[in-house]
Length: 166
Length: 271
Image 1 (cartoon, each protein chain N blue to C red):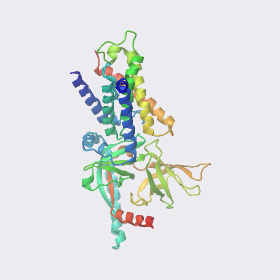
Image 2: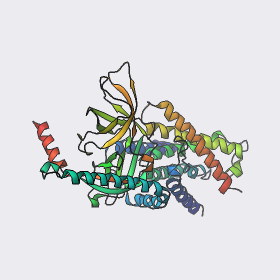
Image 3: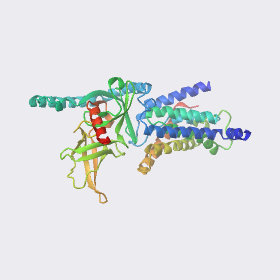
Image 4: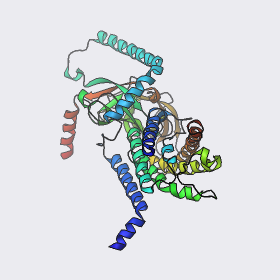
């Protein structure tokens, strides 16, 4: 059952990203990569190897639609690799319960926002740097990355309030 | 041997991470240097099908501007027709049309990356080939990057590696157009010497030297000119005629003499 819901959420986020959100650009600068939610919301005790493969799969599918073969996949794999390290870094004093999911309603707003910001930063910074392919216009690239981090994180948090209420 | 397995199992996450990142890095570099990865790009049939459906809905909101665009184009064609009727050119092989135009619809487009591509609904079956030029009714748009049977991916002028051989319309001085990577409306004009008489609102057209675009096809209009003290070239900003944010119909250009010109140029090189 859990597997099935993961598959459904994979397809839903992928479709939502490429059909609706792909052409969003706030002020021509900020982009939203909400498909990252898929990797964010997977259960905390997921097998790290499976997480890496799912990250690669998601990034690769996004790349096909964005014509950026490899770039999103590379950043998603990085996110998948770093996620267990981040969750153990910001572990609440009581630790995590078995079968816990990283949702806002379960983990609390403070934990969830820190978690989202860290993951989006890990994803967006390399994404925009690889995409610009060089250090000229560095400040412009960093500005885009910074605004996009805020944009994506806000949408992810909004999604939590809309669809994942307890 | 046992140690090796122990090592592999202990670091299996890191090893898989490393392997996948290596694969991604290879994909990025491979995809940037080769143009043949048509399958994993937006000209892939399934991907293009989804794009086309999405576009079908989105286009309803663009109808007013499409109408305007078409009527302006009609106007231009009619005036050209009238001109031709008056002139009644004598039959001469050099007046035979060198270019054939094939209308195509844009099903996907991007503006805000440093390498932007668009997908059009014409492909191999319609005679589209890699390297053909793409224009809109207003100006130059880009160049075909990859084709599948029914779709093609086009590298737009909004790409950090695309340059267009151009000339200043009023005095025929050649120069190069390159996107400034900041704004999808603007480009830089390179290789214009400081002695050149270039003013704001001068028109820039394609030179036709590359044989990809027809000669004298509009590209943009000069927005600002400034002198760069450390450089013997002028610093020129131009505005594209094509509005890349509202591209709907474009034309694929087939150069009927491409082979002839290519073979002539190869002969000159081997000499």
